[in-house]
Length: 75
Image (cartoon, rainbow, N blue to C red; front, side, top):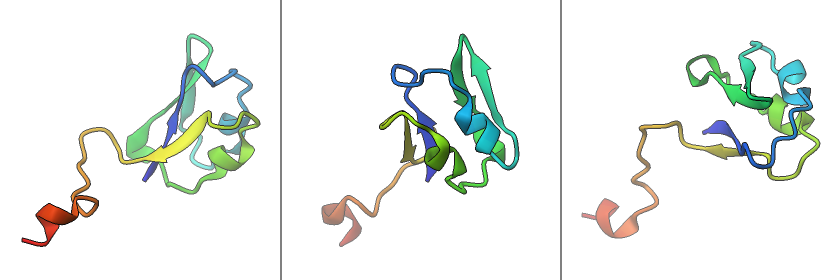
C-alpha cells in the first residue's frame, strides 16, 4: 500500500515533504506529489499531514488486488 494524495484536500503546507525520510515528495501547482518508485511506505507523510483525508493508502497505480474478490479467489 502506498500513500495517495488527494489534490483537492491537499493545502500545500509541505508538512508531508518535511516528514518524508527518502525526500520523494515534490510539488506540482502547489499540491504534493509522490514518486512511488522510491516510497518506503513508512507512513510518516500521513502522520505529518494536518488535513484529515488528504493522504490515504492505496495500491500503487497499475496493480490489482484479487484477495478482496472472494468469489474468484475460492476457485
